[in-house]
Structure formats: structure tokens, C-alpha cells
Image 1 (cartoon, rainbow, N blue to C red):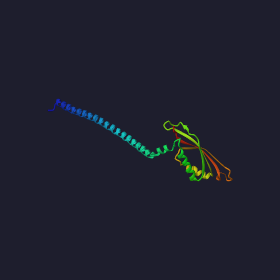
Image 2 (spheres, rainbow, N blue to C red):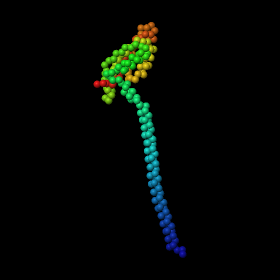
Image 3 (cartoon, rainbow, N blue to C red):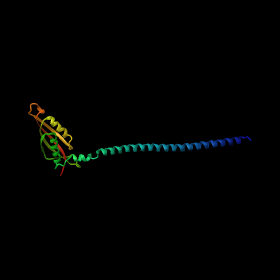
Image 4 (cartoon, helix red, strand yellow):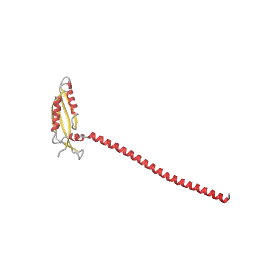
Length: 186
């Protein structure tokens, strides 16, 4: 029969089922929200780590390429500083350069002077004067070849004088003052 008591029991049961469904839905939403949040953080972290790995891989590639470029150049730089107590190889190269260009030269080297650039690589500077009897175009060819020498040198002064009627294009006296950077030997 249909009574108020049965009606209230029916409404109460349906309300309990509805409340249970709402509670289960809220628990499911809360759980899924936490899962989505955890997955989002994991994806973001993986993305950041992948970007960092890519940057570091790029840095390692640059370092690898730079190391290949340097290769034996560090040895060449080391050899560009002859020992201060033995500059015969430098003198021989100056002689062969003058012979190649076809000019006569005389040179005078001074005593090495210590340079306080670095404690790990003690250096000295040797001032020298190189005198030539030539014309300016030939001397310019000498300077072009001089720039290619595998040594650290510094031209500090240049003096050109000529008594010839055509000036520097004729016979001239050229004096070159320069320094040679060397490894200090104690």
C-alpha cells in the first residue's frame, strides 16, 4: 500500500543513493585531480630535464668542436715562444726569410728582460734591431712574410732613409726595431 511511511522510506533511500553517488563522485574527482596534478608535474619536470639535457649536449658538442679546433694549436702556441737562452731557430728563420726575399740584413739582439705576465708561464722579452739595405717594395714583401712567422714578435719602430733621387723606391736603408717574446729559462 501507499503510505506516507513508505513514501518517506522511498525518498530517504533515493536521497541516500544520491548522496552516496555525490560522495563517490567527489572522492573520484579529488583522486583524479591529484593524479592529473602529479602527471602534469612529472611531464613538466621531464620537459625541463629534456631541455637541460639538450642544452648540455649542445655545450658538449661545442666543447668537442673547440677541442678539435685547438687540437695541436696549443703545442704551436707553446713552440711560438723559443727559450730565452737559445733563439738560434728564430735567427735561422730570419736568415732564410731574408734569403728568400733576396735582401741583405744585419741584426743585433739585446739581453732578455723578464716580463711579469704569468707565474705559470714565465716570459722574457728580447729587443732586437734588424737593418736592411733594400728598396721599400722589396721590404714590404719581407714584412708580409715576417707576419707569417710562427713566433710572437712586436715591431716597435721602423726607420727608412734614402739618398736616392727617386726616394724610397730606390736604394734605402731600413732599420726595424722589434721584440721577441720568449720562455724564461732560469
